[in-house]
Amino acid sequence: MDPIKQFKEELDQRVAAFGNDKALQSIASDWVEESMKKKYVYNFSWLGRPIIQYPQDMVAIQEIIWEVKPDLIIETGIAHGGSIILSASILELLGGDRKVVGIDIDIRKHNRDEIEKHPLSKRIQMIEGSSIDKGTAEQVYKIAEGKSRILVILDSNHTHEHVKKELELYHCLVSVGSYLMVFDTIVEDLPKDYFEDRPWNVGDNPKTAVHEFLKGNKNFEIDKSIQNKLIITAAPDGYLKRVK
Image 1: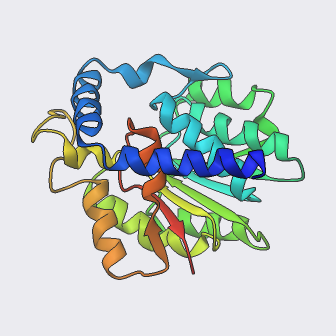
Image 2: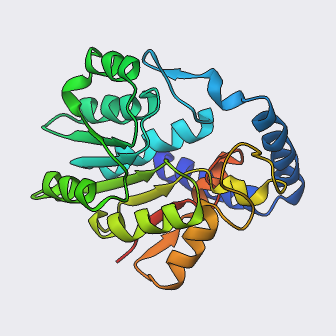
């Protein structure tokens, strides 16, 4: 057998086994719950900018971008800018005129300044405004005109209604074979009132919005192979692949 094909088959088998490994899943769930309390996801950066993600999800993002090779990545939620820098860095390696558009309701000056002076800023366009505002969406649609491969990452306000509206607004931009990534679906799997200072909760979060969205949209499927591979992720059921 071709060694590359053999390696891929072994990987697929191992990942499938992880998905059925209840003991491993339980250990990972306990670890995620405890690590969230200690703000573990705030420990990391990408090329100099803080990125509020699990390292496993960072790896998944770069794998997906490299596989899809999008012309445009649309991200809701900028914060310190690490995530759009991550996207921009892979787009830079892919070449061409690819870009990432970051949307945030409040782009703080110190973060904007650092992003704009970053070596990868040429790949980045920022829009300040609510991701579910009609005017914001119109700007994004204008930028998306003529792009053949588009990938979308949702990581802003994590309430059910907000994410539901983002899904309604941006899912149609995702190309067949590309991904719509919805982060912090993990909220549904954590104890009730885990985030005391935030409006999202069990029953009101990105995962509940994803499941409602999928009931009415058969063009997307949850790519379980990604979360099975990662084991530790902030986006269980959040890696949606457009299949048709």
